[in-house]
Image (cartoon, rainbow, N blue to C red):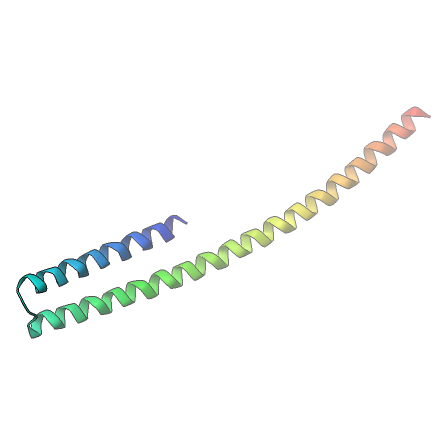
Length: 98
């Protein structure tokens, strides 16, 4: 999840840079061809970062699902072992009581 937070922070920083750039364009009263090209380039970079963040999120979601499945399997095995141990303990108690 830390990677997810890092990706979110990078995306927020990129959005902040874009907002700052747009603010400079508005302050100058217009947008020149260079400004538009720069904004388009920054937008492409943001799209790329967003795609990376989504891919990372999907990867982490897959890892989480696998970990949950493994945890459920381990819990099931632990429950089976616990039941067998309880049975063995009860058998030993029964033998001692005879």
